[in-house]
Image (tube, rainbow, N blue to C red; front, side, top):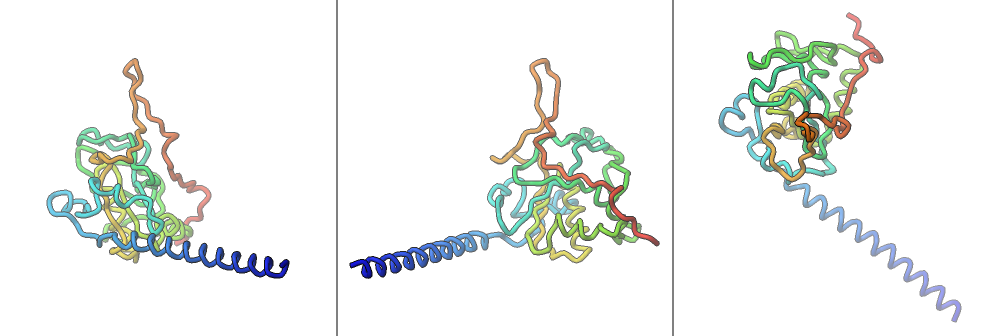
Length: 234
């Protein structure tokens, strides 16, 4: 009787392992099936498509459908406080909020920004990982610049980009493509100023006395310590 009980226990254990394994396999298959629904990047028509390259299918109106994917990273390209006067064009120079799941990796720290609207003026003009030349080439300023770029924008992932109005996101996509990233895996999802979805994280709030404050402690924000990096020697 003891031998039969032992054999039965072994059989039950084996069946349990098989069931769990099959369950994981089924779950992964379902997950992969769900991930396969991501559309190919396609620039929308109109001014925002022509100027910034905002995606026709993945943008402020639809981004909620594509959040939380394991095969993707989500990057907001704004500064906490941008020296540019974005209020002049209806925006916010302060990072007033962001879409949950996005990590903020400021474009003006990655490359020198140019071509902003005259009303906005100039943004940050300090040290950057790369310099875009007048010829449009991107030159690394530090030995670690490319490794940092690949860390925050991994080539084996889909990359969703946002900012305030879509301009910084468009510049970031243009840079990545120029440096060899796969354009078919990068989406300019537009600007937070136009987002009305269900995953809004409010940073800006007004106190009872009317004072406006910004809860920057909510923001998953990346800062670069350029003094710790090694400048490229000419």
